[in-house]
Image 1 (tube, rainbow, N blue to C red):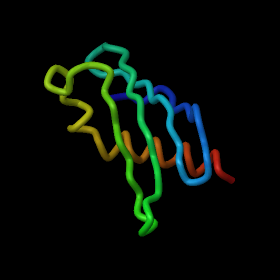
Image 2 (tube, one colour):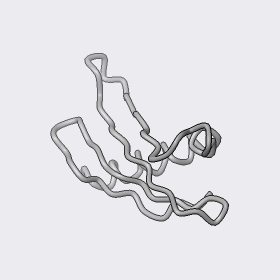
Image 3 (cartoon, rainbow, N blue to C red):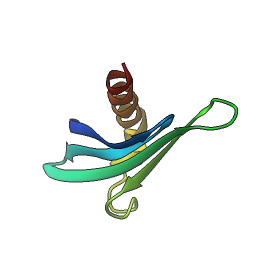
Image 4 (tube, rainbow, N blue to C red):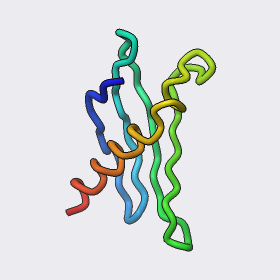
Length: 79
């Protein structure tokens, strides 16, 4: 799993959405995502694989790395 790029496409207060690109098993993949803080100030991160998760289980397998990359991009973008 190699994360190529995290792009924040929209930002409104504590809500963000964007696209993450990664390569796994010599396949380039897109992963759309959304991030928000709920009323209790807890993070809600949703990942939307561009293809069936049954066919590409790396999204579940590498969830922490994907989430860390997204949170890192949000942290850098909010400064």
